[in-house]
Image 1: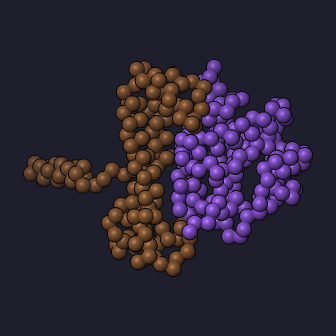
Image 2: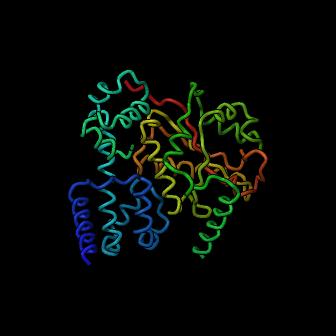
Image 3: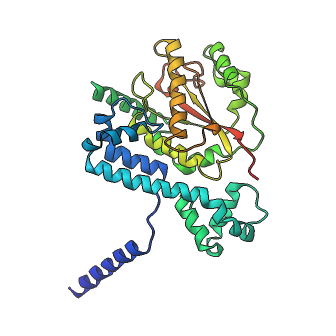
Length: 140
Length: 193
């Protein structure tokens, strides 16, 4: 009884800590599009039949048919869009944010891929901002 | 009817999977980054029209028998499976993930300096000219999706369709494994300062 109580308390605490501190992982394009296919697949087949992925056709169609789109799909669209935007921002900002760490910890290394690998390896010495941008960019 | 068609394609896809071909589900971002990133020497300059004509005029010879394609064949590349609706350029939702994986890989610093060629292939069933046109349109549809929905710079992407003309060496030209998309690293797109 007592044990279970502690466990529950620990779990609650863990959940709180997780929700409070850890920033949400950004989604990869692959996971984003998989989530959309799962949550909006039925709506897309029903409302946007024959439309191909690309040039915003499916997003436009869902928007035009907003009244008929399921709440699950709407929720996913919003969260997926936010997450992907965050990841794109991180990928764009990476070279600027990590510039100092690159010259401090990985100078002399040639090639963007190798520089990134160096920063990832030296995570403990790299600034908090740069580490966060690498995580948000999905490159860890 | 439509459900039946997609089921048939699913069965086909499963068949491909068991015959040992890399299926969409087996492909990971890491594998794409590694597989496409091994460019060690300068890539040859390419001309899409020359490649297209060489494929068409070459009959059903494999890539290695055609001089320009042979050079391309030595570049880092991989075959991906992207399913389309029957006789259409519409990419099936079950292949959206594969496109997403490719996009994630192309946005990675290991690959972001490179340009890529998307080659659409068909199996030798049905009309040859129709297959050629459809493979061309499908390769273009992949390029379009990657460069809009998945934000890959369109200047980094080239698309060409070769219909049934470049079958995999030693396979049945009508086999479903010849219905495929090839992704080839064409070398540095720009030198970053």
